[in-house]
Every structure is written in C-alpha cells, then in structure tokens.
Length: 192
Image 1 (cartoon, rainbow, N blue to C red):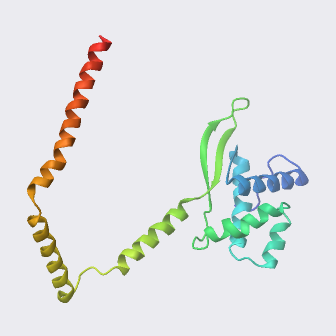
Image 2 (tube, rainbow, N blue to C red):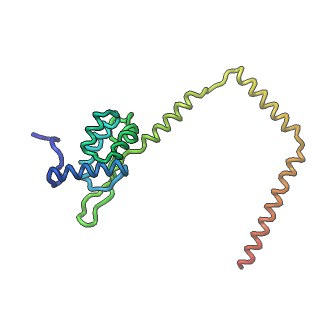
Image 3 (cartoon, rainbow, N blue to C red):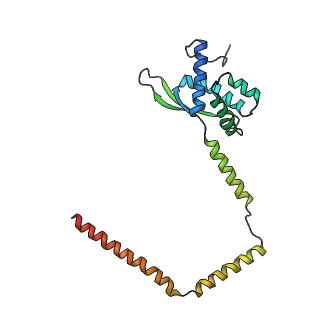
C-alpha cells in the first residue's frame, strides 16, 4: 500500500507543474501573500517551507540549491536576508492557508497563502519580558531612604509656594470656558 506516498500532480504535465510552482514560490516570497486554489496552495506550501528551512542557514551550498528554483536574484537575496532569519527559532509551519470562498466561474476553493508574521511580535514580547526580568523588583532599604527624603522635600516646597498663584493660573482657563459656551449658544441661535 502506498498511503501518503506521492503528491498532487494538479492535472498538469511535469514541466508545466514545476514551472508553475517555481513562479508561485517567487511570487509568495516577493509579496509574502498570494491568492490561489486550495490544491495549488498545498503543493506550494510543501516546497516553500523546505526552502525557508534551507534559508535559515545562509551558505553558498544552500543558495545554489534554492537558486535552482528561484531565478530572481533579488527574491533569492530577500529569502536569505529577511525571510530565513525571521524564522530561525521556529521549527516549521512558516506559512498559513486561509480559506476565502469559492471562485465565481468553476466553484474552485480559493485560499490565501501567506508567510506568518507573528514571530516579529513574539520577538518584541520576548525582549520586553526580558527587560522586565532584568529590572530590579525591590529596592534595598538604603536606596529607599534617599528616595523618601527627596519626596518629602518636594512636598515641602509645594506647600511653601503661595496658593494665590495656582488660583491666578486657573482663572483664565475658566474665563475661556465661559466664552466658549457663549459662542456655542450664539451659533445654535444662528442655525435656528
């Protein structure tokens, strides 16, 4: 029995199928998201994920192996400099397939296949978490005393400041609010 052995030939001859997969992989790496049929996306996913796994290690050998399929040098460079390093900590599952619906003409199942982007968010979260862990949670008693003294000095200075200054500062704000209310009332009367 040959269960799980083989692949979907997509009703195409070998040369046509290989060329189509190569073009779709190049488009996927260029745009990081493409819309296609479900069967083509699954065939594309197998090849693309193997290429991303190779692209994690930037070596001449790996570049030459992938250059067999990707002939665009710009996309090949992007794969090894941007996409591969993005997934270094991930062991697989670099792409996701999202169902879109059915195509109007032949009712084929359409999907969006895209490169996963949440690894960037996870990297940011890890950096923030490590920064929190690195920050001291409690201060020593010696460090608390100077901080407490500084706070008490600030409070004393605030109390010593005359209260009349704060009232003088608040008064123009109140007058501005009254003027705004008057202008709004006048505008409402004019619209009537």
